[in-house]
Image 1 (tube, rainbow, N blue to C red):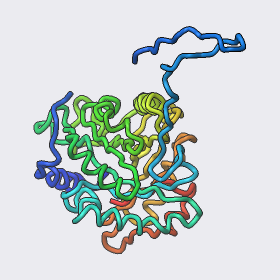
Image 2: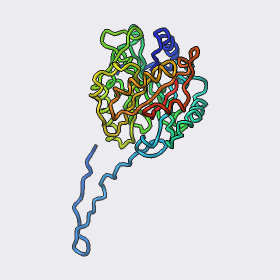
Image 3: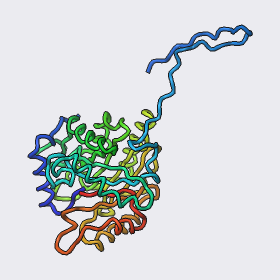
Image 4: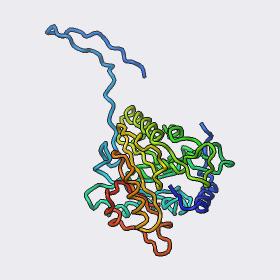
Length: 324
Protein backbone atom coordinates (compact mmCIF):
# COMPACT_ATOMS: atom_id res chain seq x y z
CA UNK A 1 0.00 0.00 0.00
CA UNK A 2 1.71 3.26 1.05
CA UNK A 3 5.47 2.98 0.52
CA UNK A 4 6.92 6.39 0.05
CA UNK A 5 9.77 6.70 2.43
CA UNK A 6 10.06 5.31 5.88
CA UNK A 7 9.54 8.69 7.49
CA UNK A 8 6.19 9.12 5.76
CA UNK A 9 5.19 5.54 6.60
CA UNK A 10 6.02 6.01 10.26
CA UNK A 11 4.07 9.27 10.30
CA UNK A 12 1.04 7.57 8.80
CA UNK A 13 1.27 4.76 11.32
CA UNK A 14 1.48 7.27 14.13
CA UNK A 15 -1.77 8.81 12.96
CA UNK A 16 -3.50 5.48 13.17
CA UNK A 17 -1.88 4.47 16.46
CA UNK A 18 -3.30 7.66 17.93
CA UNK A 19 -6.80 6.54 17.04
CA UNK A 20 -8.35 4.14 19.51
CA UNK A 21 -10.59 3.03 16.66
CA UNK A 22 -7.65 1.37 14.92
CA UNK A 23 -7.14 -1.00 17.77
CA UNK A 24 -7.56 -4.27 18.07
CA UNK A 25 -8.37 -7.62 19.23
CA UNK A 26 -5.85 -10.18 20.48
CA UNK A 27 -4.48 -12.89 18.22
CA UNK A 28 -6.49 -15.29 17.75
CA UNK A 29 -25.41 -29.85 8.93
CA UNK A 30 -28.19 -32.42 9.87
CA UNK A 31 -29.52 -34.79 7.22
CA UNK A 32 -33.24 -34.61 6.56
CA UNK A 33 -34.87 -38.03 6.89
CA UNK A 34 -37.08 -39.06 4.01
CA UNK A 35 -40.36 -41.01 4.11
CA UNK A 36 -41.41 -43.93 1.98
CA UNK A 37 -43.12 -43.13 -1.28
CA UNK A 38 -46.87 -43.87 -1.23
CA UNK A 39 -48.84 -45.13 -4.23
CA UNK A 40 -51.22 -42.73 -5.90
CA UNK A 41 -54.67 -43.71 -7.17
CA UNK A 42 -53.19 -44.97 -10.41
CA UNK A 43 -50.75 -47.27 -8.66
CA UNK A 44 -47.70 -45.05 -9.26
CA UNK A 45 -45.34 -44.06 -6.50
CA UNK A 46 -45.69 -40.53 -5.20
CA UNK A 47 -42.92 -38.85 -3.25
CA UNK A 48 -44.41 -37.71 0.04
CA UNK A 49 -41.15 -36.36 1.45
CA UNK A 50 -41.70 -32.77 2.50
CA UNK A 51 -38.43 -32.34 4.39
CA UNK A 52 -35.92 -32.01 1.55
CA UNK A 53 -33.56 -29.05 1.80
CA UNK A 54 -34.35 -26.22 -0.65
CA UNK A 55 -31.71 -25.28 -3.18
CA UNK A 56 -29.53 -22.50 -1.72
CA UNK A 57 -29.99 -19.08 -3.32
CA UNK A 58 -27.06 -17.71 -5.29
CA UNK A 59 -26.08 -14.37 -3.79
CA UNK A 60 -25.23 -11.42 -6.02
CA UNK A 61 -22.89 -8.46 -6.14
CA UNK A 62 -24.21 -5.16 -4.75
CA UNK A 63 -24.96 -3.84 -8.23
CA UNK A 64 -26.15 -7.16 -9.61
CA UNK A 65 -24.75 -10.31 -11.15
CA UNK A 66 -22.31 -12.93 -9.99
CA UNK A 67 -19.16 -11.99 -11.90
CA UNK A 68 -17.20 -8.74 -11.76
CA UNK A 69 -15.37 -8.77 -15.07
CA UNK A 70 -15.89 -7.73 -17.80
CA UNK A 71 -19.14 -6.11 -16.60
CA UNK A 72 -17.59 -3.81 -14.00
CA UNK A 73 -14.56 -1.65 -13.38
CA UNK A 74 -13.67 -1.18 -9.73
CA UNK A 75 -12.87 2.40 -8.69
CA UNK A 76 -12.03 3.06 -5.08
CA UNK A 77 -10.75 5.17 -2.23
CA UNK A 78 -8.50 3.90 0.54
CA UNK A 79 -8.42 5.17 4.09
CA UNK A 80 -9.69 4.84 7.63
CA UNK A 81 -12.68 6.80 8.81
CA UNK A 82 -11.62 9.69 11.00
CA UNK A 83 -7.87 9.28 10.47
CA UNK A 84 -7.35 12.26 8.16
CA UNK A 85 -5.54 12.15 4.79
CA UNK A 86 -2.42 10.29 5.97
CA UNK A 87 -3.84 6.83 5.18
CA UNK A 88 -6.03 7.77 2.26
CA UNK A 89 -8.83 9.96 0.92
CA UNK A 90 -11.60 8.01 2.69
CA UNK A 91 -10.26 9.28 6.03
CA UNK A 92 -10.89 12.94 5.20
CA UNK A 93 -14.00 14.49 6.72
CA UNK A 94 -17.40 12.80 6.50
CA UNK A 95 -17.16 9.32 4.96
CA UNK A 96 -20.62 9.55 3.37
CA UNK A 97 -19.46 12.67 1.55
CA UNK A 98 -16.32 10.81 0.44
CA UNK A 99 -18.39 7.93 -0.95
CA UNK A 100 -20.58 10.37 -2.90
CA UNK A 101 -17.42 12.09 -4.13
CA UNK A 102 -16.06 8.71 -5.22
CA UNK A 103 -19.09 8.12 -7.44
CA UNK A 104 -18.33 11.37 -9.26
CA UNK A 105 -14.61 10.60 -9.46
CA UNK A 106 -15.43 7.22 -11.02
CA UNK A 107 -17.68 8.41 -13.84
CA UNK A 108 -14.90 8.88 -16.46
CA UNK A 109 -13.86 5.26 -15.95
CA UNK A 110 -17.16 4.12 -17.44
CA UNK A 111 -16.32 5.71 -20.79
CA UNK A 112 -15.66 2.34 -22.42
CA UNK A 113 -19.07 0.98 -21.43
CA UNK A 114 -18.15 -0.77 -18.20
CA UNK A 115 -20.27 -0.23 -15.12
CA UNK A 116 -18.61 1.14 -11.99
CA UNK A 117 -18.29 -0.85 -8.78
CA UNK A 118 -17.44 1.61 -5.97
CA UNK A 119 -14.75 0.20 -3.71
CA UNK A 120 -13.37 1.09 -0.29
CA UNK A 121 -10.03 -0.27 0.98
CA UNK A 122 -9.78 -0.34 4.77
CA UNK A 123 -6.66 -1.51 6.62
CA UNK A 124 -7.90 -4.36 8.81
CA UNK A 125 -4.59 -5.93 9.78
CA UNK A 126 -2.06 -3.12 10.24
CA UNK A 127 1.70 -3.38 10.52
CA UNK A 128 3.33 -1.82 13.59
CA UNK A 129 6.77 -1.56 15.14
CA UNK A 130 7.62 -4.94 16.60
CA UNK A 131 7.96 -3.60 20.14
CA UNK A 132 4.38 -2.28 19.96
CA UNK A 133 2.40 -5.33 18.84
CA UNK A 134 2.62 -9.15 18.67
CA UNK A 135 4.05 -10.30 15.35
CA UNK A 136 4.47 -6.61 14.43
CA UNK A 137 0.81 -6.22 13.55
CA UNK A 138 -2.64 -5.55 15.04
CA UNK A 139 -6.15 -6.52 13.92
CA UNK A 140 -9.22 -4.36 13.57
CA UNK A 141 -12.29 -4.82 15.72
CA UNK A 142 -15.50 -6.14 14.15
CA UNK A 143 -17.19 -2.86 14.99
CA UNK A 144 -14.65 -0.85 13.05
CA UNK A 145 -14.93 -3.11 9.99
CA UNK A 146 -18.72 -2.89 10.12
CA UNK A 147 -18.51 0.91 10.17
CA UNK A 148 -16.61 0.90 6.88
CA UNK A 149 -18.84 -1.79 5.36
CA UNK A 150 -21.93 0.24 6.24
CA UNK A 151 -20.40 3.29 4.55
CA UNK A 152 -19.67 1.59 1.23
CA UNK A 153 -23.00 -0.25 1.25
CA UNK A 154 -24.73 3.13 1.08
CA UNK A 155 -23.40 3.47 -2.47
CA UNK A 156 -23.84 -0.23 -3.35
CA UNK A 157 -20.12 -0.90 -3.41
CA UNK A 158 -17.68 -3.42 -2.00
CA UNK A 159 -15.24 -3.35 0.89
CA UNK A 160 -11.70 -4.68 0.63
CA UNK A 161 -9.97 -5.57 3.90
CA UNK A 162 -6.35 -4.57 3.49
CA UNK A 163 -3.88 -6.94 5.13
CA UNK A 164 -0.41 -5.83 6.33
CA UNK A 165 0.63 -9.05 8.09
CA UNK A 166 3.91 -8.06 9.70
CA UNK A 167 5.57 -11.28 10.86
CA UNK A 168 2.33 -13.21 10.48
CA UNK A 169 1.20 -14.47 7.03
CA UNK A 170 -1.63 -13.80 4.61
CA UNK A 171 -3.73 -16.99 5.07
CA UNK A 172 -3.68 -16.59 8.85
CA UNK A 173 -4.69 -12.93 8.78
CA UNK A 174 -7.35 -13.39 6.08
CA UNK A 175 -8.98 -16.27 8.00
CA UNK A 176 -9.34 -14.00 11.03
CA UNK A 177 -12.02 -12.08 9.10
CA UNK A 178 -14.08 -15.07 7.91
CA UNK A 179 -17.26 -13.60 9.45
CA UNK A 180 -17.06 -10.70 7.03
CA UNK A 181 -15.67 -12.64 4.09
CA UNK A 182 -18.84 -14.76 4.06
CA UNK A 183 -20.61 -11.58 2.92
CA UNK A 184 -21.07 -11.03 -0.86
CA UNK A 185 -19.54 -7.55 -0.80
CA UNK A 186 -16.29 -8.08 1.12
CA UNK A 187 -12.89 -9.06 -0.35
CA UNK A 188 -9.23 -8.61 0.55
CA UNK A 189 -6.30 -6.43 -0.51
CA UNK A 190 -2.91 -7.90 0.38
CA UNK A 191 0.25 -5.84 0.99
CA UNK A 192 3.37 -7.96 0.29
CA UNK A 193 5.69 -5.10 1.24
CA UNK A 194 4.51 -5.55 4.85
CA UNK A 195 4.80 -9.36 4.86
CA UNK A 196 7.96 -9.45 6.94
CA UNK A 197 10.38 -12.32 7.44
CA UNK A 198 11.06 -13.65 10.96
CA UNK A 199 13.87 -11.17 11.58
CA UNK A 200 12.76 -8.29 9.35
CA UNK A 201 11.71 -5.02 10.96
CA UNK A 202 8.82 -3.01 9.46
CA UNK A 203 9.77 0.45 8.19
CA UNK A 204 13.43 -0.63 8.00
CA UNK A 205 13.11 -3.10 5.14
CA UNK A 206 10.59 -4.24 2.55
CA UNK A 207 8.88 -7.58 2.94
CA UNK A 208 7.69 -10.00 0.26
CA UNK A 209 5.47 -13.01 -0.27
CA UNK A 210 5.41 -16.01 -2.60
CA UNK A 211 3.08 -17.15 -5.34
CA UNK A 212 2.35 -20.21 -3.18
CA UNK A 213 1.24 -18.12 -0.20
CA UNK A 214 -1.05 -16.06 -2.43
CA UNK A 215 -2.34 -19.29 -3.95
CA UNK A 216 -3.13 -20.73 -0.52
CA UNK A 217 -5.07 -17.55 0.29
CA UNK A 218 -7.00 -17.76 -2.99
CA UNK A 219 -7.91 -21.41 -2.31
CA UNK A 220 -9.31 -20.49 1.10
CA UNK A 221 -11.41 -17.69 -0.39
CA UNK A 222 -12.62 -19.99 -3.17
CA UNK A 223 -13.87 -22.43 -0.53
CA UNK A 224 -15.86 -19.66 1.15
CA UNK A 225 -17.39 -18.62 -2.17
CA UNK A 226 -18.53 -22.14 -2.98
CA UNK A 227 -19.77 -23.01 0.50
CA UNK A 228 -21.74 -19.80 0.89
CA UNK A 229 -23.00 -19.40 -2.71
CA UNK A 230 -21.27 -16.05 -3.08
CA UNK A 231 -20.54 -13.96 -6.18
CA UNK A 232 -16.97 -13.26 -7.29
CA UNK A 233 -14.72 -12.33 -4.38
CA UNK A 234 -11.77 -9.99 -4.90
CA UNK A 235 -8.27 -11.01 -3.87
CA UNK A 236 -6.04 -8.09 -4.73
CA UNK A 237 -2.34 -7.70 -4.05
CA UNK A 238 -0.33 -4.47 -4.22
CA UNK A 239 3.07 -4.23 -5.93
CA UNK A 240 5.76 -1.67 -6.69
CA UNK A 241 8.76 -3.96 -7.11
CA UNK A 242 8.67 -7.12 -9.17
CA UNK A 243 10.41 -9.14 -6.45
CA UNK A 244 7.68 -8.53 -3.87
CA UNK A 245 5.98 -11.72 -5.14
CA UNK A 246 8.47 -14.56 -5.54
CA UNK A 247 7.66 -17.35 -8.02
CA UNK A 248 4.49 -15.59 -9.28
CA UNK A 249 3.87 -18.58 -11.56
CA UNK A 250 2.74 -20.52 -8.48
CA UNK A 251 -0.36 -18.31 -8.25
CA UNK A 252 -3.17 -20.15 -10.08
CA UNK A 253 -6.81 -19.35 -10.91
CA UNK A 254 -9.29 -20.22 -8.14
CA UNK A 255 -13.03 -20.67 -8.80
CA UNK A 256 -15.03 -17.66 -7.70
CA UNK A 257 -11.98 -15.54 -6.87
CA UNK A 258 -11.14 -12.49 -8.97
CA UNK A 259 -7.42 -11.89 -8.65
CA UNK A 260 -6.04 -8.38 -9.23
CA UNK A 261 -2.59 -6.82 -8.98
CA UNK A 262 -2.57 -3.12 -8.08
CA UNK A 263 0.49 -1.29 -9.38
CA UNK A 264 1.39 1.26 -6.70
CA UNK A 265 4.29 3.14 -8.26
CA UNK A 266 4.74 6.73 -7.08
CA UNK A 267 5.86 9.79 -9.03
CA UNK A 268 5.41 11.37 -12.43
CA UNK A 269 3.37 9.87 -15.25
CA UNK A 270 6.58 8.56 -16.84
CA UNK A 271 7.76 6.97 -13.59
CA UNK A 272 4.41 5.35 -12.87
CA UNK A 273 4.13 4.06 -16.44
CA UNK A 274 7.59 2.51 -16.19
CA UNK A 275 6.59 0.68 -13.01
CA UNK A 276 3.34 -0.41 -14.66
CA UNK A 277 5.12 -1.90 -17.65
CA UNK A 278 7.59 -3.79 -15.47
CA UNK A 279 4.90 -5.40 -13.31
CA UNK A 280 2.69 -6.24 -16.28
CA UNK A 281 5.59 -8.35 -17.62
CA UNK A 282 5.55 -10.61 -14.54
CA UNK A 283 1.76 -10.60 -13.98
CA UNK A 284 0.21 -14.09 -14.35
CA UNK A 285 -2.19 -14.11 -17.30
CA UNK A 286 -5.29 -14.75 -15.21
CA UNK A 287 -4.59 -11.82 -12.86
CA UNK A 288 -6.41 -8.59 -13.72
CA UNK A 289 -4.55 -5.24 -13.89
CA UNK A 290 -5.08 -2.49 -11.33
CA UNK A 291 -3.53 0.97 -10.92
CA UNK A 292 -3.13 3.22 -7.89
CA UNK A 293 -2.72 6.98 -7.58
CA UNK A 294 -1.69 9.11 -4.63
CA UNK A 295 -3.19 12.56 -4.06
CA UNK A 296 -0.05 13.69 -2.19
CA UNK A 297 2.96 11.71 -3.44
CA UNK A 298 1.99 11.93 -7.13
CA UNK A 299 1.71 15.72 -7.02
CA UNK A 300 5.12 16.69 -5.60
CA UNK A 301 6.77 19.61 -7.41
CA UNK A 302 5.93 19.50 -11.10
CA UNK A 303 4.28 16.07 -10.88
CA UNK A 304 0.57 15.96 -11.61
CA UNK A 305 -2.08 13.38 -10.82
CA UNK A 306 -2.72 11.31 -13.94
CA UNK A 307 -6.09 11.97 -15.55
CA UNK A 308 -8.65 9.20 -16.14
CA UNK A 309 -7.89 9.47 -19.87
CA UNK A 310 -4.19 8.86 -19.19
CA UNK A 311 -4.96 5.94 -16.88
CA UNK A 312 -7.30 4.36 -19.41
CA UNK A 313 -4.60 4.67 -22.07
CA UNK A 314 -2.33 2.23 -20.17
CA UNK A 315 -1.94 -1.20 -21.75
CA UNK A 316 -3.58 -3.39 -20.69
CA UNK A 317 -6.40 -1.12 -19.57
CA UNK A 318 -6.73 -1.12 -15.77
CA UNK A 319 -9.80 -2.87 -14.41
CA UNK A 320 -9.25 -1.52 -10.91
CA UNK A 321 -8.35 2.10 -10.11
CA UNK A 322 -7.57 3.22 -6.57
CA UNK A 323 -7.02 6.69 -5.14
CA UNK A 324 -5.18 7.22 -1.87
